[in-house]
Image (spheres, rainbow, N blue to C red):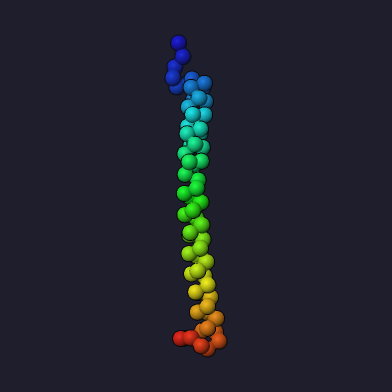
Length: 65
């Protein structure tokens, strides 16, 4: 009789099943995650433009000190 602590085939089957579940989950949510990352990129780009616009105006003497 095998002990459960030494059963490598059960451990391998569990790892395969777990990784398959993870891959299925990531494939199902991939469009949502891609959309959120895209929106985050757009927002960070807008904030970068605002920051550098203020910085350039400050260096040119047009903005506040």
